[in-house]
Amino acid sequence: MRIRYKLALLFTLIVASLLTLFSYVIYEDSSRHRDEVFLGRLENKARTTARYLIDVKEINNELLRIIDQNSLTALDEELVLVFDPRNKLVYSSIDDKPVKYSRRLIAEVREEKIVEYTEGVYDQIGLAFPSKIDSSKGEYVVLASAYDKFGKYKLRNLRNTLLICWFVGVGLTVLASGWLSAYFLRPVATINEKIQHITAQNLKERLSEGNGKDEIAQLAINFNQMLNRLDMSFEQQKSFVSHASHELRTPLTAMKTDIQSGLEETLSAEEYREILRDLFQDTQRLIGLTNGLLQLARPLDKVLRRNTLSVVDLLLDIQSHMGATQKVTDICFDPAIFEMKPDDIQVTGDESLLKTLLTNLMDNACKYSNGHPVYITIERQQSNCFIHVKDQGIGIAEKDQERIFGAFFRGNNAIRYTGYGIGLAVSQRIAEWHDGSVSVQSELHQGSTFTLRLPLA
Image (cartoon, rainbow, N blue to C red; front, side, top):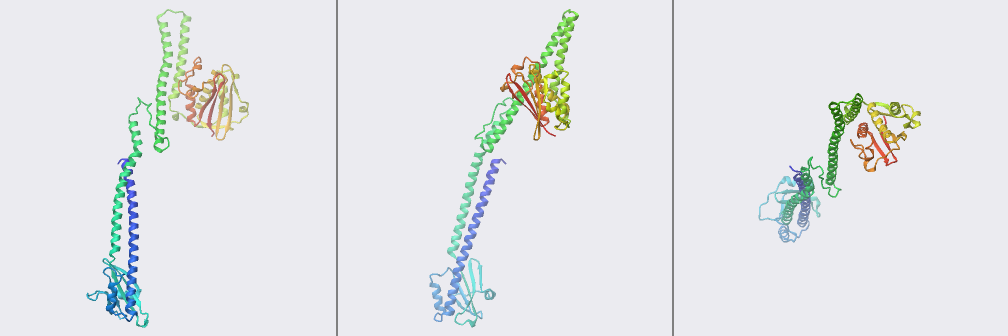
C-alpha cells in the first residue's frame, strides 16, 4: 500500500476512533442522566401517592385514583401499587385491569428499602414507606412503574444525531486526509520523478530544495549533497584517468623516440650513452609515477598495521633519511623536539605509511622553498597531535588550496617544478585512514604551512 493511502487510512481510523469514543461517552452520560431524572420523578410520584393513601384519612382509593390520573405530574403509562404490612394490595392506580406483581420483589423492597429496576421499556421503582400516623402498623410497600416517552424520544434523537455526525465526520476525514496526504507528499513524488531522470550522464541535475526547512527539504538537500559528492567522484575519476594517461604517455613517447633514434641512425658511443641516460631517467619517472598510482589505488585497510608509535622517533628517522637527499640545513626541527622523550607524544598507526606521509610533506616543502629553510614544529592539544611543516617558498593561490589534495592537480606556479601531483593526495588519504587530516595555510610568494593532525594513542 502506498504511503499516501496508509497515512489517509491511519488518520481516518484515529478520527473515527475518537468520534466513536466521544459519541459513546455523550450517549452514555445522557442515558444515565435520563435514568436519574426519570427515576427521581417516579420516586416522588410513588411517595406522594403513598403519603396521600396512608397518612391522609380524607382520601380514599377512588379519590386518589382520580388525583393520580389528573395530576400535572402524571407519567406515561404509570402504574402505582401499594401493599400493606401484610403484603395485601390496598391500592392500584388502574383498578379496571388485573395487575401482576412478584411477592419476592416485595420482600426485597422491605429488606433493601428502595429498589430500582427495569422491565422491558418500563422504568420501575419499589420503596418501603412507613406510616407517619401509626408507625406500629409496619411499613407499606409502594411499587411504581412508567414509560419515559419523552426521555426515550430525546435519547433516540441524540443517538441518531450522533450517528449522522459520526458518518459525516468520518466521510469528511476521508476526503481531508486523502487531500492532505497527497498535498504533503507531492514534493516526495516530485523528488521521485526527478531522481528517475538522473543518470551518470547528467549528474549535474539537482532536486528542488523547497523552503529548506522541513524534513522533505532536508531530504532533498542531503540528496543534492550526495549528488555533489558523486559528481565530484566521477569528475575526479575522469580527471584521474586523463591525467594518468597523459603522465604515462609523456615518458613512454620520449622513450619511443629515443629508441627509434637509436635504431634508425648510426650514432657514436657517447650518443648511445646519452640515449641510455634519457631512457634511464624516463624509466625512473615511470617507476615513480607507477608507485604513486599504486599508493592511490591500493586499499589501505588491507595493508594498515596499527602500532603505538613515537612521533619524535618518526621525525628523527625521517631527518636522518632525508639527509642523503636534502641538505640537512634546509630542514630545521624545533629544538624542543630533541628535548622530548620518545613516549611524550605517541600515536597509533602504520609506521611505513606515516613515514611516507611526513616525507611527502617535507619533500614538497623543500622542493618549493627556493632554497629557504623548512621549519618543523610539533604540538599537543587535548587528544590530538599537530605537526607543522612550514616553508618560505612560492605559496599556493587561495582558489587552489582546496584542490591541491586531488590527484594530479598542480598549481600554475608549480608547473616548472618536477612532480606528478600525487604526493598530497596520497598524504591526505593516509591521514584519513589514521583518523587524522592534512590542512594548509598559504599565501602567494609568502610560503605555506601544512599541518598534519593525528589522534593521540
